[in-house]
Structure formats: C-alpha cells, structure tokens
Image (cartoon, rainbow, N blue to C red; front, side, top):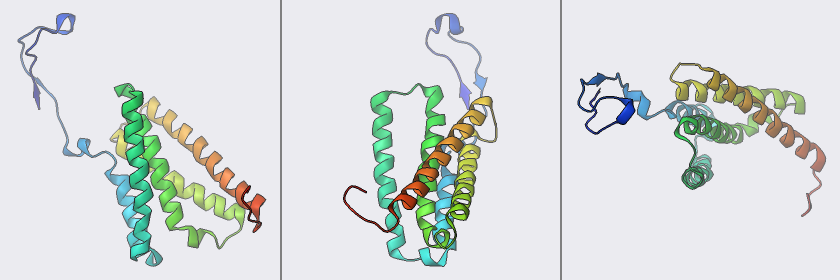
Length: 175
C-alpha cells in the first residue's frame, strides 16, 4: 500500500511528498479469526456438540458482540486501546462459550480439577486471542493485557466454583 499526503498536514509533513510504502498483510483485517476457529473446533471435534442445539451457543455470542459494538461506539475508546479491549472481550466471551460447550466433559471431575481444566482452556483461548490480535508482535501492552485477562479469568472461574459450592442443589429465587 502506498500512502501519499494530499492535504496540508502542518507540522506532520510536507503536502505533496513522495509516497510512503506500507506493507499490509491480508490477515490484518481479520484479527479475531483464530478465536472463532477455536470455537468451531470445539463444536466440530467434540462429538456431543455436533448437533443443531449446540449451535444455539452462537445466539448469546451474537447478542453480546452486538452490545459490545454499541458500547464501544457510545463510549468512544481511543483507537490505540480498542484492539486491547477487543482482545480481552472476545477472548473472554469465546472462552466462556467453549466452557459451555465442554461442560459435560468438565463436570465429571472434582471441583479443583474442573477449575484447573477450565483455567487451562481459558488460558489457551486467551493466548490465541493475544496472538491473533497482536499479529505475533508481543509488546508490553500485550503482556499487560494477558496478565489482566488471567486475573479476570481466575476471578470469574472462582466465582463459578463458589456459586456451585454455595448452592449445592438448593435452588431458590434468592440463590
């Protein structure tokens, strides 16, 4: 891609200068493709998920992604931070969807083993999101986002475990 200034840029550069060549890769336009590929693999590779009701997992994902795009436009994130927040959000939502798809396999273990397996699944999804959004260029911002994602995942999974332990087959409106 060649970029040529045609307007007065002021202190940023001359008006009609030589073209600047920027190498644009085709996959820059589709950063979250790897996350969705992991979700498709969770549907295709697990035999219990190869039925039409398993595809209903896409309905809440569609709704949440629509709400996220509305929220981003309403808040107006700075463009430098949008990619980081997108990586965090999509990694969490796709990770939770994969946990739902694999819940029948994860629920057959003790709570501690289930917690560790769930954390490992979310870590794989988080790393996939970081790799796909950072385009293999790990910066300090990417490492910081991964640390934040690990803390969020740990807190969320701990809340799931504590909720399951607290309710223990005692269902009521309050619980």
